Image (cartoon, rainbow, N blue to C red; front, side, top):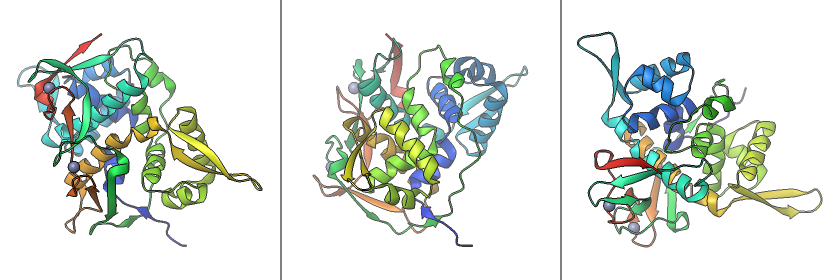
Length: 306
Ligand SMILES: [Zn+2]
Ligand SMILES: [Zn+2]
């Protein structure tokens, strides 16, 4: 039997850890300061068994550490350095959510940058030239660590609507969690940023079953992430492109890639080499404050609900 493989960029590796709705909800709460099992259950609305399973997974993956309280029966969870390094992913998601879906929930969490004392919107900037990153200005080529993997799509079911609908607390991100919690949708978005636009190209790149692929494409079109253009009349065939809203997901993809590179790249080096054309540097993205331009760090922000 022929083994089917897909490109194993660091996004793929990152998604093996965080490409899951309950995991993203838990990490979001952890960034907001939640640290006990009961609080995670109450604030996410995720069933206890799932919270328990995912917290264990995050401990195994070294994103959280469980510290038994010296006295008493409760345990506390704290973010490790690796867990904290996911903060730019949360910021990229927050920036996208604010720009494209603000007001849909009737309230918004605002980020306050303690350093400059202003309400901040996260901006994806190039570390080298500090310019805002536009995906069309980014060049990429295969790096030394590019490998093919056999995609193992877990049988993890997609979470029911109830999982997210039950949440009534202020949340950083919402739609975007649904999107990135589904690894298939993310791989389709990755295919777009890699220049694959036709059904058979995307299918080859992701190795998704055609019926699942067409289902996810329809969902992404409904969410305004993709649009279809017909390139052949008989038989009718379509190309898929990111809308402006879809292109704006680039910082999320890039922050996942950087996190995956940092923690999962093998000794050969990163699988993908990115460059920022305006400054000709190897691209390193920084999520920065739109007011003062300084990088937004976990310990230097607070939140307020409006
Ligand atoms: Zn640059
Ligand atoms: Zn600032």
